[in-house]
Length: 135
Length: 310
Ligand SMILES: Nc1nc2c(ncn2[C@@H]2O[C@H](COP(=O)(O)OP(=O)(O)O)[C@@H](O)[C@H]2O)c(=O)[nH]1
Ligand SMILES: [Mg+2]
Image (cartoon, rainbow over all chains, first blue to last red; front, side):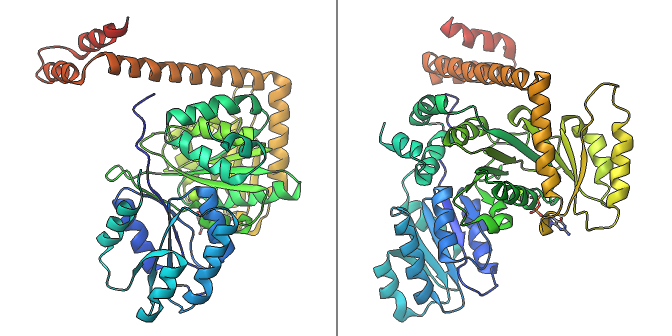
């Protein structure tokens, strides 16, 4: 009808676990907004169920998890399981934060397409999202 | 069409979410879904929540939804935040204030970006609300951007419009200036735990007493949304407003006005699309250039353009 508003990439940025620092997550959210994405930001202390539920309701293309507490190998598999349980199986997953190199394989095995560690240029994250989502 | 409609009618929330995306992106497919689901809509009561930035709209929306859950009602929420005029991207953060409902099967929360629409809503808000209506929610709550401008459009989208004010901020005066108070069916003084709430209530009362005799006076209610206080009264007041709409014929009138706006807006879009298709882009560009060079006035140019389909 009217020139259709070009479809936007929708990204959920979530912080699972108990650590209360979301500066990194907010920086990523802002970079993605400036890159033209619609970013749903849900705040700190999200359970895996809450993250999966938000991904479902918001129909996002991408879920980015930010974690500093070191509990990623405990929490991320639960997020992936909750997504699967809800039939949300086609989202692109990435994560960022303090994640040791030796955990890379395990996270890739879970379906994470990228891990962004401290010092990452946020433009690389924007580029990653555009390369992995067709809209 | 795929089986999304079947899954939607079965109450599958993922199907609801997917259909909303297609509608929001204004795809041809999205219009087919709107057509297919239209017969299932028309039952929900829509409530608009507007007010200045930080007045507590999201918190109040969440608290009102929780009150409806206590009453056994199912609730859809659409929360609009602004798109960046520079990147067209957006950060949608209203869910942060609605965490208590995060895992409630009877609640569905959708964040929407304003995508260039002025007036505090999004271009496809009516269509998205109509899809939620068809899904069978008893209430659909619509939170506006709340940029502190005159967001009067919500009154055309929602049956009941709530205007949120805060004590001690000078916002009372702000509301007068904006003239937005006229669209409110219910006035809420939120953050009633802050000093000055009663003063603001009496200021608003004094203001409303200037309304013409016989006109409906919107009730003024105090809430403390973060503590869930005052929500029972607010929910009751919304029921009373709906009853008033039904008994005064206002509901039918509102529906007729909405239908007129909607049909005309869609027709306008269809015509524009037709014009764009029958008038080659190169010729349009040439026409526009002549206007820019002031060889032609814009009205004559537009008539020439519209003539392409008459
Ligand atoms: N003291 C107090 N703070 C509140 C109340 N309702 C909301 N807030 C706070 O006001 C801030 C803005 O709330 P939010 O719901 O995001 O406002 P919005 O921008 O209008 O959606 C948050 O820090 C809330 O916790 C209330 O009733 N009392
Ligand atoms: Mg808000």
